[in-house]
Image 1 (cartoon, helix red, strand yellow):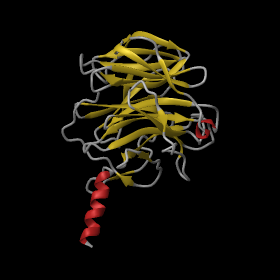
Image 2 (cartoon, one colour):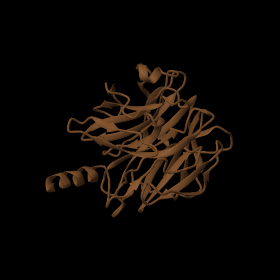
Image 3 (cartoon, one colour):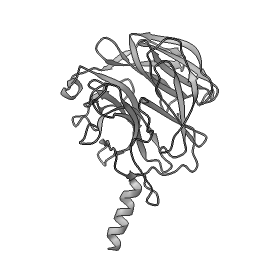
Image 4 (cartoon, one colour):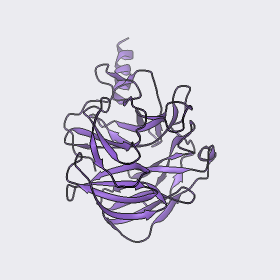
Length: 310
């Protein structure tokens, strides 16, 4: 019995549980927010989602479970404002918001994560879903989706505001799960693990219950990338629908968490809400995930000595 108890405690801790704490999806019980990006700064998580279609608001949390909605941080002007990505540059300490408005990607800058972002540059037309990644060597890479064809590209960046060279196409729809409802690969997010680059992305149409998450790997941030044969790793279940387009953060114990959106049901095409669930690597370096809804799950470990995300 003692051995069984120890094993249970170890497994619970590996998924971020602490003292029996649990949570239940959705963690933000508000219809509308989607495509979330989260950063950690000075002991607080800041979440930025697609929201009212004309601007971005910020939500804050200390534990990834309980969120407080804050003020509007950026309003670019036109409608169709989607899929933000916020990156803190450790070189200058500023916060860079990569936005999509009317299928145009640009960037705005602020001195604080909850401050007012000021528009600074426009990068691409006929494009969506930008994501900034800074490698261990300090080099910057901007991932985004180019139309037509929902083709994911990577752009080497000289700085968070300056492009360097030409973009490289790295993924496009080829697999059956990406084509269930339209040919879609979108929502890129880069995760580096033991020297391998894992590019998470979402496939099939975002306004359907079959939206899902897969990944591809490479030995360099510019590829070439190979799609995981077991995709999608996060997909619809009997109770969780259309899980997709999110980000990856760590809790206080360093465990990985996917912050993403689900579709409530099929009564409307965009009735989405924010959820969290664990991600984990097995001994072979394979990335695993899941989607839950409505049932208690082991909660993330609270923050202790938090450091700024990069």
